[in-house]
Amino acid sequence: MVAGCNAAPTNATATLNTTNSTMTFPLQRTEAEWRQLLTPEQYHVLREAGTERAFTGKYWNTKEPGVYRCAACGEILFKSDDKFDSGCGWPSFSEIAAQGKVIAREDNSLGMTRTEVLCAHCGSHLGHVFDDGPAPTGQRYCINSASIDFGVDTNVTLWKTGGKK
Ligand SMILES: [Zn+2]
Image (cartoon, rainbow, N blue to C red; front, side, top):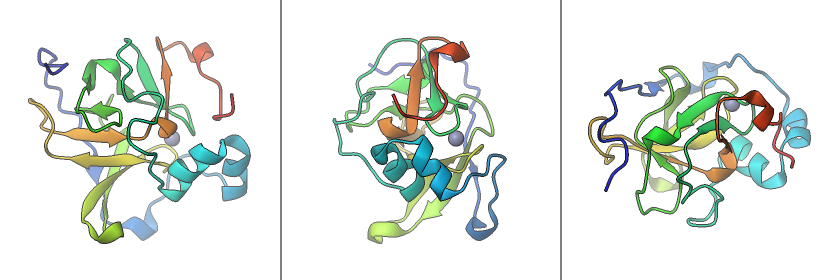
């Protein structure tokens, strides 16, 4: 059972950017500012490209309808309509909320070639995208719970700037 089978195939996909060193983002903060805004776990994942352990994040099994915002800047990145149970222990989405919300870049760390996904607004690390997801997109965005904030609707009052609760 895969969620999103009947969704219109809008096919919002991350734009692959191969010019890592010159990437700039609309929201610029110093690392000191990020440290102030984020919890230590969020900072490690979002700013140091860390990965939370499988099945430990708060959203891997979340099924409520709503939206997932970047935990660093608040941009809506993913929707519950596109979330599916991949069994991998991290929140998994078959597509992004809208074209251009997420940027992909090649990641050759840990001896693997993977595609890292970043928030297009603030450049924070979200997770990776793989091409073994469900139809129609075939994409599996494997995202750290620490990188996103869930809200039951799009009302911004449900979400607080920064990550500290
Ligand atoms: Zn962001």
